[in-house]
Image 1 (cartoon, rainbow, N blue to C red):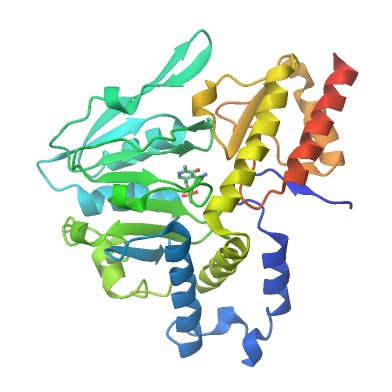
Image 2: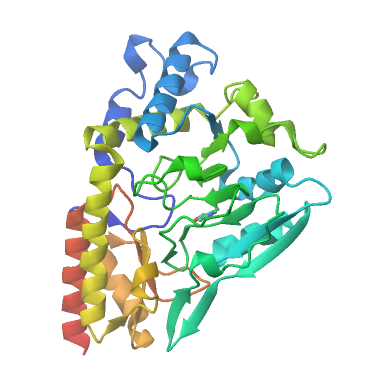
Length: 361
Ligand code: PMP
């Protein structure tokens, strides 16, 4: 088959250079005679891999020293439970900003562990989805924390400005935006991200947490979800997902070689502008998110006549443009264009969309 571009929202494309490197050292890693996944997580060899990955991530995101970086199990949804278990004491409530599907699910899960104040910040004006500016969010000054999702993977809504919470710890689900653009980590109490988009394979979750927030977990918190336990044990309280950790390390190296987050964010912007630009000029396709809140990573779009949907997907796949079907909750199409998606993937997609529209208009 000729070149394939995979637009899946996650597990998503990984850089081909990373996979080739992993392939070359799969069976015999650095002349140890073993695969990296066969090594003890406590072996001196793996500890080097683990420390290097953490150091590279710290470097890429300029993570301040008073933050711990945890390599966990359990995916993004695991953190939907871990965050309230660790940060929501009895008698307090937490503000959950709802800007789409994932932030809503996070709030629903948190309700199992304490009092949740859900704040819907989206609005539809003239058919366009808008997000209320964060200064207008009715935050509770006494909340234990504020949770939000800067990039809604399903809905394609991205909040670029970091909300001001006046000292209340800000928690962000960055599963589908981490490492796509520069952010100031010091503005957050905790950041979490499932790995399967911009970091590596599924099975690994990254948590970046400010150390002074540790140590207040609810008594029933499972030890493997307790941030303090994980921080004290360098994420080795139990056996961590070692192979995913190693692969994440290769992705971090790949990103550093390409000039880091600053450089990749320019390419990400270019990719998104190309795709949204074409959608906007075409009468055949539409996107109904206000331009200011359009996701750089997940671009949903709808065919004006949805009876063409199946044919669109079939012909796209025949051209190597895979996994463009939108999430079942919102329908239509979605192109997830994470860091590993080259500009050539977007050029190929836009060329196909033009051709398909010309044939069917
Ligand atoms: N949050 C966001 C923003 C996501 O995109 C996803 C998965 N697509 C999740 C949470 C859930 O992640 P997981 O499947 O790793 O639990």
